[in-house]
Amino acid sequence: MTRIFVSTSHICTLYMILYAQQTNKGAYRDVLLLDTPPKKASLKKLLFDTKKIYAWHDIIDLSPTLPEETDFEVSTRKALTRKWKNVFFIRPFYQFLLKKYVQKEDKKIQQKLQKIFIEPASVVELNLLTQTVINANLMQVFPKAQVHYFEHGMGDYFFIQQLPAKKFYCVFAQRFREHLQNTGQAFDYVYTLDTHSFPALAKQIVENDTLTATPPFLSDEKLVLILMESVQMYQVPDVFYTDYIDLCVSKIAQPKEYTYILKPHPFQTKQSLEISKKHFQQLGLKTTVLESTKSASYSAEVLYSLWQEQTYYVFSVFSSALYYISKLYYNDRTQFCYAYRFFKQYIDKAPEQYVRFFKGLEDPIKKVVSENATDIS
Image 1 (spheres, rainbow, N blue to C red):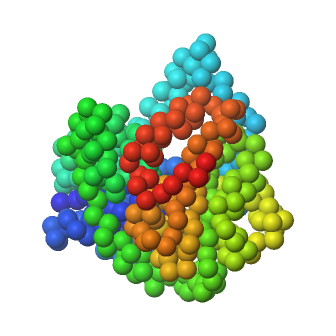
Image 2 (image 1 turned 90 degrees about the vertical axis):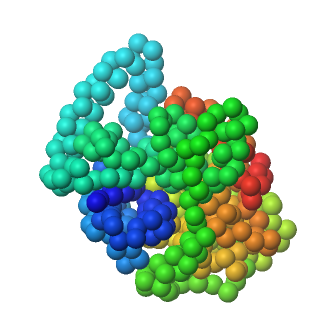
Image 3 (image 1 turned 90 degrees about the horizontal axis):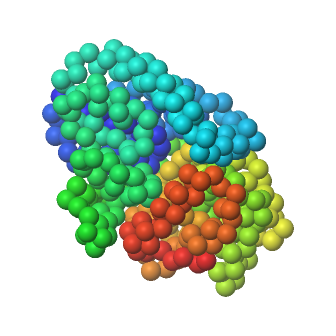
């Protein structure tokens, strides 16, 4: 019997491994599929390296490989496309073309899946993310398989409510069930993802990787972790990045007593990172930036296992990694801080669909994932 796990990132792969370890007693062949959107080779290597900690029957890559130097800056053309495709007289035409393109791509993907899994009946379980591209294709090819969804970001608490019958494995299951119950919604599909062994898993990953055995990953200094964001889709002005840093630093009583670790997002633009680095230099604060593409692709939740004893503050705008770290490594010393309300003032030029998504995060943040974190806005 085969179980398929569809992944796009380091952290969601690790969550799936926790589930697989707890539920596979030898009866299943577990296959990891890398979803179709393009990925850098450094991220792919991290995902393939998970075979060192879990015996995947196979790892199958369905995605093109991006050059390591790829920048995710939103071009003028892309910004205009995001804006104009929502104009009422353009939307129907755009959606028609998109539908035709998706149908063509879906046919290719289904044919590829049928070649890989020549016995469809042997696939008994599909373990997916709420937004992975190949979900519908997998359900089409393997209609009898049970469907499970896993979270890999707080947006999934928003998206899962829009999906039909399902099982949803998540880190903040109890609070999510309470939220759904309080709002009169069904909550019996919500299951707890047992993460008690995550710190041990993180330690195992670190021990298997020479990258984490050298500076700047290990430090005896007092640390502040800044989780950088991929927010270019909101078309924020450059001043946002410096204003955000100023907000974080203002919450620290003696800011020069700390070393600041900047952990870039894998899809962050080079320009936003350069602006942030320059501003820290102007402030005269000691800073370490994890600039290599591999360290950027690395799960912050794993790297944090190296820093947890020295870290006094963790900051993000509204990165899921902040909430996960606050849950997985909670202690009374560290302050976990986010700035959701602060960010609102910078999205007046954002495309309509991203504004809707941002507003849709408010309830999941306030009522589900922020139990150990504070909005510093």
